[in-house]
Image 1 (tube, rainbow, N blue to C red):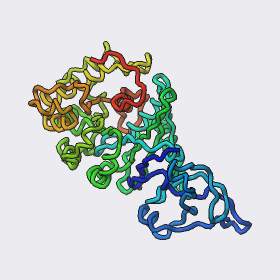
Image 2: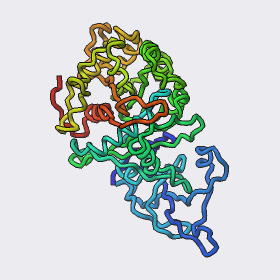
Image 3: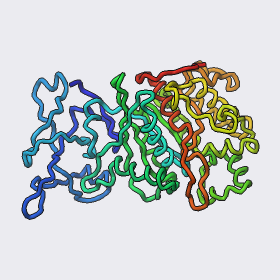
Length: 426
């Protein structure tokens, strides 16, 4: 097996899969109730979880011979040097957190999902995975929630957490609550694969409080730098003019959910100034709650023709046809760009996004740049995780996600490793 580079989604340290540590899988206990394979402690694990003497399962380095150094690791099951139990469970050598076996085998190419304060990012990631699970087969995409977790904290696995969030949103019809500021930063990790290309990639999302947005960006610079693409969820209310108009119209459900102004978000992202490595990756700027824009298009001076067909929303083409209408994605991005500058006084943020434009575009004056240059690495998206606004109790009559998968599909298309059937490339 060839050696693969891994980026740990917990501590963001890089390592080769030949450096991954084995961890005992045994849960057998003695007659006195104690684990037969005694638990150990690790300073690195304690440091990550900010605790002292936290018990974890026994770990040991891979036992490979001379040939493994030449051909790469075999990653076959090995016996625990403590209790003799056969194990094929791997942990990061830096923080000792459990990682998916297929990530160690195939490498960890990551698309990161980040979100600004009060952007509805948790609702977005749940709606994205729900729609991908429901319709992904149409473009040969399969998604699964990983089952890894800390010892004794099975409830923290992505599979269990996502299942609970999906039930609350789609069955209980309750808008997901804002993430508490003191919540632990535990990533949601989803495995995305495509059979016809045999390609794999991981969606990694930190369900952290929006107030930590700037802090997280500073701490996780390496994470974004090494990600293959980035989905950045922005609240439409971070656009000051939009927020003022909607609040004046009586949108009381927005009260108590402060949204950072666009310039604050720009300042946070601008901490990567001059990082050409980051600007060379697909970066999707995703405005959530876009149903509020479409429903109030006249008041907001927004041309919603690209979003509607008659009195109904014009949802993503591949949900029915299995083909991605790239022309529609381009048109949506272009109308959002134009409105930001001409109507919403957000030209600065639009020009900031041009850091991800093609080299040719960046050499031109802003008004001469082509927003649909195929070499651009940015796009603007308008999505709705819920399909409409909740009532005062944060309850919903129904949940109908709108265009939530578009940003991910566009990034996969830009990466060029997945086979994405595209029509109308203009």
